[in-house]
Image (tube, rainbow, N blue to C red; front, side):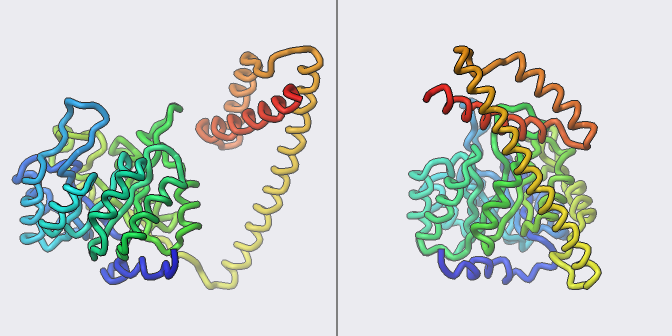
Length: 360
């Protein structure tokens, strides 16, 4: 993508004194519900009001949205509050209806981003529009698929582009509905530093008590904004009840969030930062050296197993190692989630090295 800096223009033109905030209910349920929540948020730092009109659900039989009539409710929100309005689109029909009702922000959901066919259909329907188009990360942790979705929208001559990080599904047990996998979003930023990046802590968390901490983490990582689900009666919401907060709670969250300076020009700060970064660099080199030594030992084990016709994977031994590392990790202030991720990767690399030896 060339001239990437132009893609931040739409955000700059808003002249916000705070990160962008897109908020509203997971689903538009009734006209009264949509307008009530909007009026509770209109005097806050919320810039755009979101509501799901079409709700692609994992399994049939669940509430799948009110459909096109909800767009008229969003139009009323725009007229009565002055807030921008936003909704998800999943096909060309949705796009045409959203444009017809003058929706300001259209986002492509995680279930759509996984399919290049769907993204291309949406891109073709949006070709040349001046609306803001946001692309959520795909359901699974696939950076290339996320980047590909962005590039398809860009190829449709759409200038007002951004992306939404909503976490990734995983079979591993976690306190989150969708694991953040912050490193994937950071890598996306490295590839597209001038594309606005918005965090959706509601879908990452899956529960309202985690939303503040996730929001703060994203701002600490220089995200450009937040998309947070808000409902006047969350426990009785028709979809995703556990992850929505009341408008009052959302306003509290926005007030309590700390906006960090991106950098400091102070000489003392820079000296201390450079010193700490040097320590990080040294520690990283030590890590690589240690990992290299470990893999050499793994190769030795692989050779011994090959000579004695023994299978590579020894589950009992592996479970013993993992259990010990989790306990030892706690003593070093390392979370179980982190230890599992790191040692599963190390174990897989050890297996790969041993396979090469056995397959010779």
